[in-house]
Amino acid sequence: MKAKAKAWKPEERQRLLAEVKRESAQAEMAAAESERKVGPVEFARAEFGIQPFPYQARLLEDPAKRLVACMGRQSGKTTTIAIRAVHFALHNPGVTVLITSPSLRQSMIMFGRTAGFIFSSARLRAQVVRHTRTIIRFSNGSEIIALPASENLLRGYTAHMIICDESAFMPEQLITRVIFPMISTTDGYAIFLSTPWGRDHFFYRAFMDPRYSIHRVKSSECPLIRPEFLEEMRRNMTEQAYRMEYEAEFVEIASSFFPQDLIRGCVEPTLEFLPDLEAEVPEGEYYGGVDFGKLEDYSVVAILRREGDLLNLVYLYQFPVGTPYSSVIGHLVRAEQRLRFRRMQVDQTGVGEPVLEEIKAHGIAAEGLTFTTKTKEDLLSRLRIAMEQKRLKMPYNRRLCEEINEQQYAYSKSGHLQFSHPVGSHDDLLWSLALGVYAATAGRQEPAKLVRAY
Image 1 (cartoon, rainbow, N blue to C red):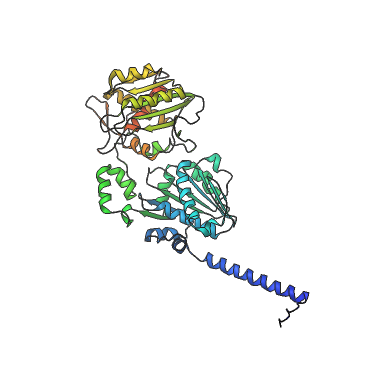
Image 2: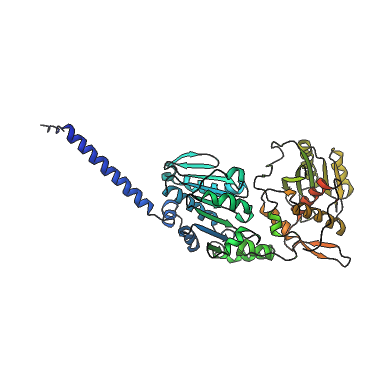
């Protein structure tokens, strides 16, 4: 015979249900408490199977509210901070983590790494309640947001952790007037990451400030990078570039015609390059600069949009070495169809009249310029004046910034400026930009006299 089920009195049933709920809540609290005790290093091991290197572990576990990380290439700073961001958002309900940088593209690199970790784990993926191109929101109310370092876009946010990637290129006033106030009421974390660039900026001063927690990591400290590779990079790069990129040193050649701090002042976080010539373009005055490659050099097209006295670099395209001039001309024809150049300045050195005449035959308002000591001085002096007068704005592009900064100068016996770039480097991006600025400014007004005290 089956035993009869016990008949529970209503008050006993309610008491039992209350006990079950209490035990369940206690179990959930215990589980949550246990999870909260898992630090970022253990979290990296358990969730992603990553064993952080010692310098990564120090950065992950650093309790300081102000962190400055100056790290060499491929040392894993993006991976490290992405893990830290995910851990912080998941283990602290209702917090906001902001990722920002001098461009949306750069912000998306860090955000993409962060999203990659989250969606690689079934457990973490199940906690995502919203996912867009720039936002990830979790069931605990926390969210991770990626934005460019634009005052208009950042104002209004309150953050509990803000990650500033390539912060050496971010406007200093944005850091002091927008970013720090965002964490003022939350007692939040501010993490500043960058490779070195310039000394007259918040990032350098913070790097030298003993009140900040400083992490300097050379690429050679990463066990995954072989010494042979670093030696190859040292041979293929300028000494300055190598020390900055791989040894995380603040260095600058005294004879640089364009100082690093001057270049950073031209970087505008709200600007983005046109992805291609088929993208939608706003109406306006467009000017072009074309530097034709010779032998081992690149051909480069730079396009600027003029707004009053302001020149915005909107397009920069570098062709592979050895691209036929006919292909470059075809690219220019398509650009003319889309933008209707007011003027284009072409480096005629070495290519002669035939190439210039073919460009003109397609209806492009192009003019040639042969590089001499005098014309080079005029081109770069005009570019420098536009930069000093804050009339030139360009999207963040590390390679372009490096090429501009690597241009060195000396005086000839006649007193003219002579320019050169270090062996192993290129300056094609620089000259295309200088030609574009010349196209946009020549004939409108004579450039102010350049005082030769650099």
